[in-house]
Amino acid sequence: MSVMPGAPPLLSPRKEAIRSRADAAAPERAKWRRRAAFFHSEDLRYLKFLIPQGARVLEIGCCTGELLAELKPSFGVGVDLSAASIELARRAYPNLHFYVADVEAPDLIRSLPGPFDFIVIVDTLGSLDDCQSMFENLHTLCSRETRLIVGYYSHLWYPLLKLAESLSLKMPVPPQNVLAPDDIVALAALGDFEAIKSERRLLSPLRLFGLGRLLNRFVALLPLINSLCLRHYTVCRPLRCPDEPPRSASIVIPARNERGNIAAAVRRIPQFAQMQQIIFVEGHSRDDTWSEIERVIAAHPQRDIKALHQPGTGKADAVYAGFAAASGDVLMILDADLTMPPEQLPKFWEAIRSGKGEFINGTRLVYPLEHDAMRFLNLIANKLFSQAFTWLLGQRFTDTLCGTKVLRRSDYERLKAGRSYFGEFDPFGDFDLIFGASKLNLKVVEVPIRYASRTYGETQISRFRHGLLLLRMVMFALLRIKAQ
Image (cartoon, rainbow, N blue to C red; front, side, top):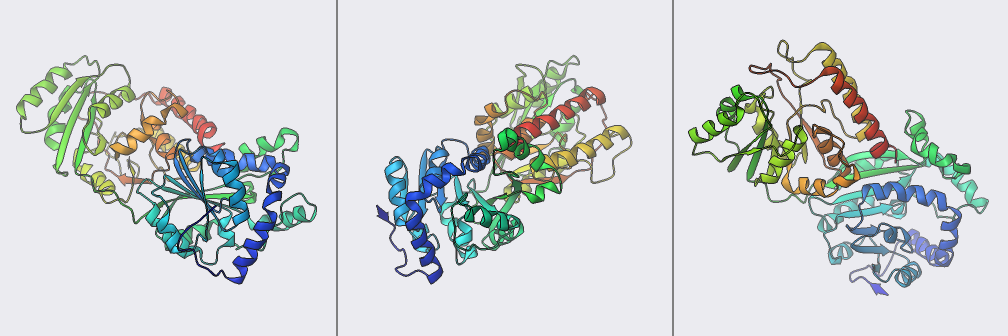
């Protein structure tokens, strides 16, 4: 059994009582977990959605190690105050690493083999003496990509939980800190962690002859009813661990029947990064777009401009082909119709360079629109769908269909690696990127733009056909993201 160096020799009386109680209860923990098997399976279901297999995971307050093992990390570390619990964990899961220590000891944090992809704290906050200091100490174990996941229970359930303890339906626990979701968000902020999303889940801890899963998956999501859920989860990102600032950007421009906009796109894109690359992806045009791209490249030998024929069909295929050819630290999409003014690209660059956001989405619905820039029914539909997607994804989206989206290439590679979770479902690519960013828990920032009218060509958007697509995307997000 390992005891981390630097663990304080003395604990507060409260924590000493918690430790003694955990030591005594450790041999019975497996029995209690079996009794609450449905609750633990529902809890695990959502945590598995947040944490993919094969990640580097640290669990703070791991008890006897079941949760850490079920997450199937490539490298898993568990820390707990109870020596008896850790002894059982090490016997059961020899492939993982377990340590006896006080997680509030700064020396412990510095001695752990970080950084980790995920730091999981489930119920442990209830036993800490100083939650804020614990959050502050975690930064040495984080990279920019690390996500902190805090799971806790709603104190609205306190009377029922105590009743369950008295009926021997739940493992007894000592008095816990009272922490609502807003309290956890505030404590994390004091420790320089930014909450990305906060979810309430698990309306029924009982199977109820099969109804429990239905209640937890769908009914628990409904407004007002959602506030009655037993569990709340907060996902945070660290603010003290920025990567090296990006230096280069690749601007991918899908172009189909956009001959009249090619020269203007190159002329109007300002210089905002140390190194910039423009990649035109020509999509089987009928108006000589390819020849115009070749002409413009020849006319601007001083600029790094590439061109390629789209291998398949659809905007998504063009964007992915451009991303595959890109060499920049940051990937940007600019629609060739130039309704998103290229002059606005530096705002997107600054939002991601500064670390204010990790997935930068344009929004056309803040500033007044130019005449005929967007039809009235399209505008109403966009606003309604934006409200739906904000609820579904847990972060604010006011305009999912704005073509300009920006993210780091390293984050896109992670998104691409996890694309099998969603499959091939989006011909435009907007939702593939949005849903992928949501699955990765990237911080979303929206940049308002002044949406312009087309000056060349015709829109390739069909309000009714694409309206049906939006409805399909809502259902897809409900089933694959929200209703876990």
